[in-house]
Length: 208
Image (cartoon, rainbow, N blue to C red):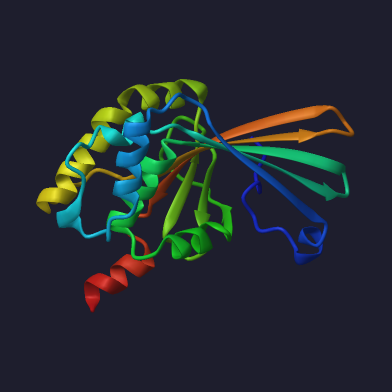
């Protein structure tokens, strides 16, 4: 996996950015399920108002966003798949003060040489030290999709009862696909987004 993928691009590069976004569900979603998900996403985010049916998270469709960019390599097309997008957004609303702050953190990242693991997976960290990005294998992604119902159920119950947990929370699961039209070259990456357990921001919060 190529390092530096998540580093912030220069402003000059973004001056050539042409956005054409289309969002489409990757799985069928009933009207009832869609309504329930909208109810979840409209919650204030307080832990006491968490969901009554935690499995509604996993019934929501994945979301795919496509866009293109004119740059030095010519036109490049991108496709971003957000797995369980509505569920993860609702989870972040229950645990994070601001979705905008979450996106700002992820907009500036750098490679991270994590020590101690045996998977040789790609890691990156947000520059504010709040979030970790981990590269996933196809097997890891497939396993998570199968286990997602229990994952969301556990976290929703934990938040609803204010029970402490040592589980490292996954805040998003994303696949990025890149197509360089001029070269006919396609690349693909899949990531997990984690909250850093001992970030500087969290430690400062404990000390105040």
